[in-house]
Every structure is written in C-alpha cells, then in structure tokens.
Image 1 (cartoon, rainbow, N blue to C red):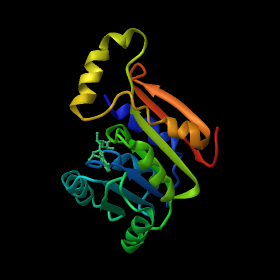
Image 2 (cartoon, helix red, strand yellow):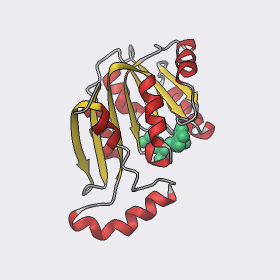
Image 3 (cartoon, helix red, strand yellow):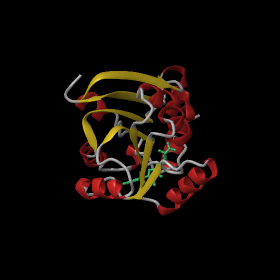
Image 4 (tube, rainbow, N blue to C red):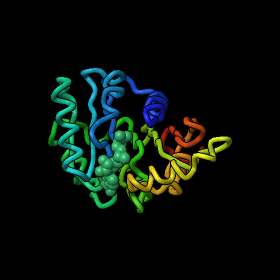
Amino acid sequence: MYRAGRVRGIGALTLRPGEQVLDLGCGTGLNFPLLQDRLGPSGTIVGIDRSARMLQQARRRAIKAGWDNVILIQADAVLLDPAELCATIQGQGGSGTSDAALATYALSLMPEWRKAWANLTQLLRNDARVAVVDMQDPVGWARLLTPLARAACALGGADITAHPWQAVEEDCTGVIRDSARAGHLQIRAGTLGGPA
Ligand SMILES: C[S@@+](CC[C@H](N)C(=O)[O-])C[C@H]1O[C@@H](n2cnc3c(N)ncnc32)[C@H](O)[C@@H]1O
C-alpha cells in the first residue's frame, strides 16, 4: 500500500551516487534499500528518528545488508538543535550538510511539523533536493474508503489533515507533484530556494 509513495518520492529526488541523504523519521529503514540503489556505497544515509526501538530495527537492517554507510541518530525532529545535530553527523563520519532529504509518512505524526521542517532545512545544503510523502483522504471513487484510510492513519498516530507537503510547495522550486493510491498518497519533491 505505502511502498508506491516511497518509490515515487525517492525517484523524484534524483539522487546521485556518492551523495548524502537525510531520512527524517526513518523508522525501521524501509526507505534504505531504495536509497542505497541510488547512492551506492560511496553515498551516505543519515536516518533520524526519535524512537530507539525503530532505530534498533533500522540498525539491524543495515547490518544484515552489510551497509557501512548508514548513520543513525536518535533525535526529536521538532526539538533538535540543528547545529548540534550537524556536529553529531560529522562526528560519525558524515557531512555537516546533506545533499537531499526525505520524510515519508513521518511529518503527519508531528503536530508541530512546520518546526520539524524548519529544522530539517537547516541540516541541508541551500540548494538541496527534498521530498515529502504523506497521506490525505482518498479522492474520486475511492472516497468510499475514507473511513478506512482515516482509521489506519489514526491508528498509526498520523493526522490525515496535516498535508505537510505544503512545505515543499511553499519553500521549493521545480516542484514535482505526484500521487498514488487514488490520491491517498501525496508526493512532492523540489529544490530548496524559494517559491515554485
Ligand atoms: C509511520 S512511521 C514512518 C517511518 C518511515 N519513514 C517509513 O516510511 O517507513 C513514522 C516515524 O516517525 C517517527 N517520528 C514521529 N515523530 C517524530 C519526531 N518528532 N521526531 C523524530 N521522529 C519522529 C516515528 O518514531 C516513526 O518511526
């Protein structure tokens, strides 16, 4: 169900081998295989999540796959100090500023997602590419499935009305707009640096 959003969001990021990408609210690292395909062993994934349990699973995934280019940091995206986090990433062998970032099904779990977005932009190059993938009510015939979609989001703690991809619309140029699963999954990607 949700893989389609990951595939399209990561595709829209146009990652290049050797780049560093930040995965905000990375969870168990479900995005990592798709990211690795594009970054290669010379690239770096920085996964940030506030949950130690999620990060433990992400670490297991990385170890099992033999990836030594994954940096995992436990931090709250809303409360973190960007300067401190940059230093932590550097301390673990990464670059202080990432080339790209994504947040898949994560910002809608954060009531203060705009603060998390503001923090995220501080961790990136001025012209970094960013992708946000998140959920809304289905459209068209699939509106019938709205109660189901809402229940699934509520169960996972997500606010289906948050629409955090607005940040990409507001702060990026060259915005790519995509959707999947009858509009339930919304994908936005763009380059930081001003309104589209
Ligand atoms: C629904 S999961 C999505 C995980 C992953 N991005 C994916 O696509 O599978 C949301 C993740 O966001 C994390 N999260 C929620 N609020 C957070 C916050 N304020 N700071 C950092 N991570 C947060 C949760 O711990 C969880 O791992």
